Length: 122
Image (cartoon, rainbow, N blue to C red; front, side, top):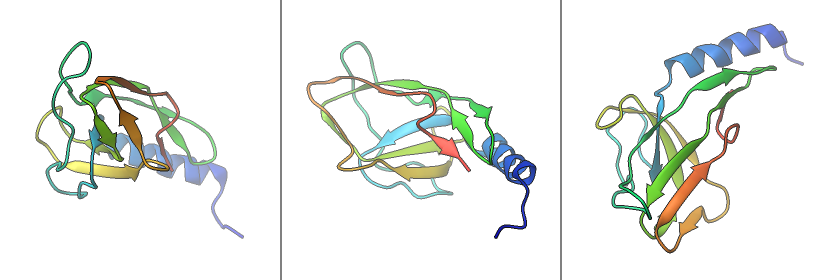
């Protein structure tokens, strides 16, 4: 039995989301929180170069905040992790998530969209 009320959990999630890096990146291996991003995707998709995407979080209920959608241009490869970073280039990784299954395989090069609500902070 939790001693926390839903409002306490929501306040905690809101605080985490507001202090988490706001630039989402894609990775082929696990980057390390607190360090510069490693194994980040590079190259081009079907209509442009890969770049980190600025996202925002929407306050939810029950201690969960959800991220906006993000669309990336990617070369042919398999993405296994997403991360949040403090800057559009360089910066520091602030959160990492392993994608389910074997990740996302992109072949041929193209666009990958992470739908709104897929990434949550709780």
